Length: 211
Image (cartoon, rainbow, N blue to C red; front, top):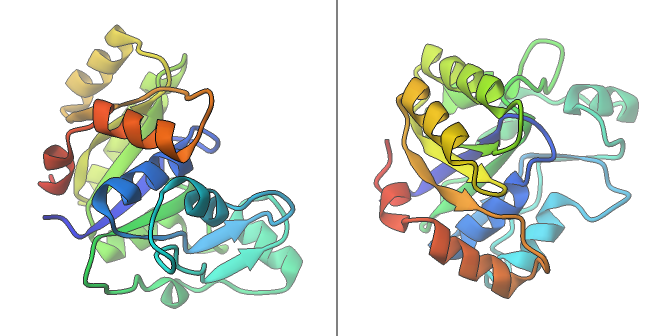
């Protein structure tokens, strides 16, 4: 079984934190977001704590908590701190670990390094979250190419949103990538509705089997 999985997205605000919470719950593992930008509202780690249904202590503290809801590199500059790649060494744990990146692949952590550079160093398998709405084909195929250009293993695509069958087919065929499943927008979004949707929408064997 794949024990460490990176969850990233084609963009920010697409629902990858909700997916990460659901995945961590399915795997009964740990969750870690290395960098949190923006502390005024519920943080991603707090959302996962609320939604994943994990035992206490399974949501690990962030390496950096930054006040401004901006790209991490800029938020860190405003806070007067520096994020270095060495700060983001992933923890080694006896049970599965879900690691959530910030925004999309090209989001910078400082003026020299982006998240995709960190992922290339880690060489951990990645799940790419993509919305099903207009514009997703371009963003998703570019993200797939960027991952493969750096030899980052890609498990597959997790679609988020209402079903758009042709869009999902187009991405999987042009990208030569597996569709792992689809997570619809949930109303209400609760621990129970998320767990039910994850069980219905995703095959854990596909995810755990890696690339």
